[in-house]
Every structure is written in C-alpha cells, then in structure tokens.
Length: 374
Ligand code: PLP
Image (tube, rainbow, N blue to C red; front, side):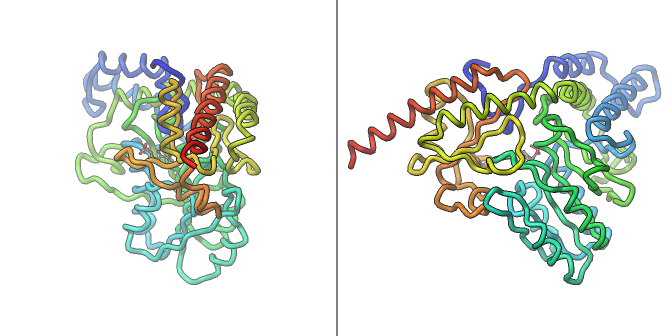
C-alpha cells in the first residue's frame, strides 16, 4: 500500500498471519460439514478460529457465531431480542448505522440515548429511561468509530440487568485495539468484525451470553448450531482467527501509539480542535475539527500529499456527510469540518508525523486561499 495509510477504522491492513491463514485454508479446501478427512480438517480450522476469537473477548468458543461481519452481527442480535419479546429499544446517540437502522427496522419504539459533549453516554438519563414500562433492549457501543470514545458499558450493564433488559454491545472498533472482556462488561450480545482488526473483509462474529436466545435468521442447512445457515466462509474465518490472535498479542504495542497520536494532535492544535479528547479513547484514533475547512477538502488535500484519512462520516457512496456523532455531542457547527485519523498494527511514529506536516501545510494553503477570496 503506497502512501501513509491512516484510515484503519474504515478497514485495517490485513495482517500477514491472516493472509497466511486464508491462503492455507483455500489451498486445503473442504466443507466443514463433510465427514471425510478434508472436511474434518476444514472443521478443525473453523473451530481453532472460534477459540481464538472467543479468547479475544473472554467467552467460551460455543458463544461465538460466525457470520458476514459487524453489520450482520448487530442485525442478528437486535432481531433476536425482538423475537424474544423485548418491547422497546434504547440506542446510544453515537451508534453505528448497523445498529441504528436495524433498530429502526425492528418495528419497536426506539429512543435515542444522549451523550455529553465528549461523546460519553449519560448514565443518569438511562437510569430514568429504564423506569418506563416495557422490557428494554439497550444498544451501547464499546468504542466509537469516528472519535474512538469508549463508553461506560459495565456501568450501563448493571442498570440494564436490574431492569431485566438485554444489552447489545457493538465492539467492532474496540476488539483488537483495547482489552475486551465480555463478562466483565456485562454484555448479553456483542458484535465483532474481522476487517477492523487485521482480518479479511466479509467475516465477523456475534458473541452471545447465556441469557441471550439467538434466533435462526437464515433458513438453510443449520450451520453454526442453527444460528446462521450457509456453508461457512472457511478462509475468512481462518483469517479472522489468526488476526484475533495477533491483535491480542499486539494490544500493548498499540496502546503505546497514543503518544504519537497525541503529539500529532498537539502539532495541529492551533487550527483544529480535538473531539472527544476529554473521554477515555482508543489509543490510535484522532478526531479533529477545523472550523471553516470542510471535511471532504481536508481528506482530498491530504490524499494529494499521500496521506489517507477519512471524513468523520462517509456513506457507502463515498460522499461526505456531516458527522451525526459530532452533532449529537452538541457541536453541529463542527460536524461538517470533522476528520478521523486512525492508525493500526504497522503504523509508525513517522506516519503520525507525516500526517501532522501534511495537515499543517494543507490548512495553511486553505487559509491563504480564503484570504485571497475575501
Ligand atoms: N459497527 C461499527 C462501530 C463500525 O465501525 C462498523 C464498520 O464501519 C460496523 C459496525 C460494521 O461492520 P462491518 O463492516 O463488518 O459490517
């Protein structure tokens, strides 16, 4: 990959361990449901990956259902809660569309759970909301994709449990970047995605605790203990397992990246404000807003300088839209000028320095142009 890649929250570079595992699984072939030797070997590959993914979030392997990614995992969790008789859904204001749209499509009443100016969910609001009638499904992400802000999931879980609710945690951005312990967090279900932690795209998992009854969503051959029919994506699952293992081993190294991230933020501090910096955050995510310097322009200018970052929020068409995350944090004025810079397992201190240099230059050029026009 040429240039400086700092868009890991969109998708991480695939780890060499994952590439090797995918390749090996493709060469070995076989359907895990076949009972001959090649089938049994494919089954062993899937189960070894299940153990690795389970270990990453501290659950038993049997709690893991493999599926196509974080989006499907959250859809399955929400549909399962609806079919289990939960009557209303409370959704964090900064949740990903995978959760928001799935909740909206459920047909149940949906309430938006506000966050404070740092993007942290308001626990007092939840406590009050949980007093209303109706068994609640509560959706709270562990770490936000735009800001990296980490939510007080364990504290929320205690409230949800007391209200006999179901807590769904989207840990797509957190897993493999910070330690994640499903049981300590008190989750009922948790969404995971391989491509955010150095595995291949198109594979993910839903972790489910004992209280969560997961519904059969796909009708078919009954794979994944009936929870997700369809022949398993063996190469993808193998890559996911290898990436999960490598990510777990690399957590400490990634934590050290916060110092490089903070140094870059300090360099641009004269012209850009950090979003969510007062809250606990992922170590490799930086969300910045530069008033008057629109997100798309920042991304394009940096791209021309060989540095790949992201607008705070981009939709699948590639168009930049104002960040709903930053809007919900009470900064609608900053929302159109937000960028996200995110590193990963092979990001260097020099990459963060190059981002800082390129951003300062781009900002200076933009400011000069604006002066000319004025
Ligand atoms: N949840 C969060 C927080 C994400 O950032 C993403 C991806 O951008 C998803 C869910 C969706 O995951 P996937 O791309 O694996 O469907």
